[in-house]
Structure formats: C-alpha cells, structure tokens
Length: 305
Image (cartoon, helix red, strand yellow):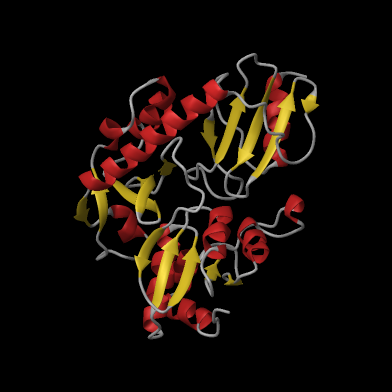
C-alpha cells in the first residue's frame, strides 16, 4: 500500500475530503465531507519520513493516524513524546499567529461585504480588510496560508475569535464565501460575539449566528449571540456559559458519530439545551429558503436551562 492510499483511508475514517496535494512535513487544509469545498476544517499531515501521518477533522475533533500498511489504530492519535524544542517552536508560531490576528482586526474598516449580502444581510456592517496577506507572519511555516489567501477573492470579512476579550484568532471569509482560519492560532474556547442580552445562544458559523440573532430580535427576545466556528468548539464555548443554548447545524449523519451529524453530536454531548433546523443545513440556510419568520417560529419554544 502507498502512503497516498493509506491517507485516503484515514480521511474517509474521519469524514474529510483528501487534499489535492499533500507535502511531507506540512499540514494541508481540506474540506469536511458534506460541508462544501470552501470549508477548510480538515487537516492532513504526512510525516517528514513519508512513512505515516495524521488525518484530522477539526469540526468533529476526530483524528486518525495512518502508515504505509494502512490505518495505525482506531480513534484518537496517541500523544507524541514530549519534545521541548518542538514545543518552543509551536509556542512561537502560536504567539505570532495571535499577534497577526489582532493586527488584522485593528486594520479592518467597518464596511458592507458581498458575503453578508449573499447571506441575507445587505445592510450588515462587518470588519473588512483588502489585503490580509501582508499581516500573515513571515516564515516558511506560514507560506501556505499566504498562498491560500492569494488565491481567494477579496475583500475579506474578518471574524475575530476572542478568549476573555483578547483576540486570539481570526476567520477570513472572501467575497465568494470561502473561509480560512488563522494557521497555528488557538481556537479552542474562542468565539465572536454578535449581540449582548439576557439569554445566551452559541452557533457555529457567522451567518448562522446572524440569522439566530435576527430571529430572536423578531421574537422580542434579548440575547447574547456567539459564533464559535466549529461544532466541537460550539460545545466547548457553551459548556462554559451557564444556561446557554446551542443553535446547531443539521449535518449529514455519520456512522462513526452513532448516526448523528457533527452539529447534533457535539450539541448533545455538551449537556446544554440545543436545537437544529428540521432539514439538513444551518439556520441561515433555513432563513434563506423559508424566511426569517420560519426560523423565529422554530426558536420560539426553545429556552435555556
């Protein structure tokens, strides 16, 4: 078996699309199955020696090792031996990514954006940046991200992810809706707040959170609404907020998640009150297809615990 064939098996096991090109020693972004080509929540790494690697579904939190003779064992990747030098390098990259994220947010202008218009919010003002590539950290490790940004269609909507009020990461959304997260930045527990109120709702995507916010306002309900970027992180954020409610995506059921979609699986696992649209898709999809009133009617009976 080739390393490519083993990689294909591992990608299938964690429900991510295999990358078109994989370079040894470098994480490569790829889409999660069923989320569209613009979704980049999958990652694949082939080790430097070309004899093994890891497939990672960042949205579901699943990881699968592989080697030349196939999968290297089910489930989570075993933690590697502690390498102080590698940890130092990772820390430096993480700090550089955090600084770059804050710099991007500071450089933005408050403007309308084509993505917001396409998602049903033509009058919404977002953080917009024409050229985020100039603020991506220098060095070979970040070259792939700079190249990805160069292939995307500006201007960019910049969604900050904050932990305890500090910007630690960003998600870039281009004019065509393609998304890219800041490489090496800490995402676990980070979220973007769209509104403040008595209730607390946590959604995955930015457009989904906008639709939830608009539907709750239509109902006259005061709510804090957060976008937490991924299904696993939605649960992480919600778990830290007493009485919070999860507005989950209705994703395609997966065998390895016991027949549940990613959004449903993590929402149920969180122990929080949660809801999702009746049909496949997110609440922005429901908003676009059936109107905001349909979303409001669906959310009307949901109350936090």
